Amino acid sequence: MPWPTLPRNPFRAVPDFRLLLAAILASILAAAGAAAAVPAAGGPAGAPPAGPADTVVLLSIDGMRWDYPAKTEAPALSRMAAEGASARTLIPPFPTVTFPAHASLVTGVHPDRHGIMNNEFLDRGRGLFRREDDASWLLAEPLWVTAERQGIRSAVFHWVFSYTPWHGIAATRRVPFSAATPDAEKVDRILDWLSLEGADRPRLILSYLHGPDAAGHGEGPESPAVFRRVRQTDRLVGRILRALAARPRSALVVVSDHGMAAVSRVLRTRDILGAGEARRARPVSSGAVCNIYCPDARSCTSAQAALKRIDGMTVYRLEDLPAALRYALPSRTGDLVAIAPRGAYFAHGGAPAPPARGMHGFPPDEMEMRGIFRAWGAGVKKGARLDTLRAVDVAPFVCRLLGIDPAAGLDGRVPEGLLSAARGSGSAPP
Ligand SMILES: [Zn+2]
Image 1 (cartoon, rainbow, N blue to C red):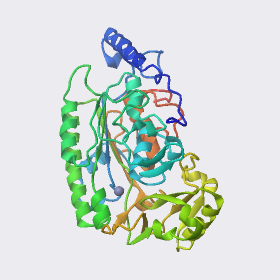
Image 2 (tube, rainbow, N blue to C red; image 1 turned 120 degrees about the horizontal axis):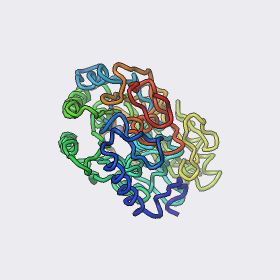
Image 3 (cartoon, rainbow, N blue to C red; image 1 turned 135 degrees about the horizontal axis):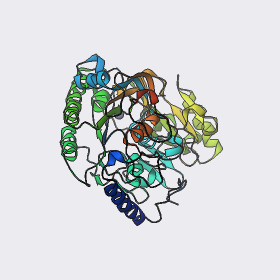
């Protein structure tokens, strides 16, 4: 059962239909003469989508905490906020970790619906997930599929689950993941994509930058190494911004997946659950969150007791998880979910890697876990500023800029206040 909780997707069984549809859309578009003359999504059935932006670039910066740009020189991000829209903080989903957060950014739903519970977790039917590339793990539709379904070409240079087709649909251009690819090389390629002309030109471009995440883990959240990376990354944002400034109907959205908190203590799950009945429970952890999968009630009770002996540890049973965490997916969430005390994080096994000085994964109501949000260009209201925006709101926002319909039933909502009054689309009034 590789697809335990499939969302409905009319294109899955007949992927060739998508090509046919794209061809029909293209011919309608050609007949209409110009994309700008065609009604936006929500208009007459079959009308090709057109939004305020002709091209949207969505860029994610790993581990860029909300307050980093203001604590060093980040002129490109500052320019985006001054000339465009921003939120003081972007609220990631729980856990505040790269895979679940990037999945929420492009699906507009929380982990209990997109199914990516952490960088590592267990699916009770399928087995262990460990930073997999295979999009069949993702249970909700990502943005590039939403776009391609509606005849919009997309190009993705690294984003979780962009590497294989999702239900038979993939980004027109995609690049196999390699952790060794420098961020500057991704930006070079994005600029190449932006210079393409004709039907082949992507209108939606996504990319993931390594940003200051590794420096934050290794040196701590406010170390000189972190701010060096922030400045380097800002220069890359500046290159994209300058390229887009030459294309009047384009927009840039810059987000991050999570923040970073200082840590000084490692919690070794093998030691914590190393005695008695607890030994039979299986911990799968990443950062500040550990899912524990129990073969029976006795091992679960014993594991819970062992975890609770650690001062400050939060332990939930699957059935008692707070609804606000949006984390209960019985096929994948642990029988127990443990959240490390502040200043500590989980590690499995005894390998003495250099201990981390920074970690994330803690609940998103903690300010240090919050990320950044900037939007600039066509369709974006100049100077608009929100106190908070949620990661799940980013996908519907990007859809609105492009003038396409988001996937049905998202958790996220379009932040209307960040849009220019010019030309909306979809169901909401301008
Ligand atoms: Zn990280």
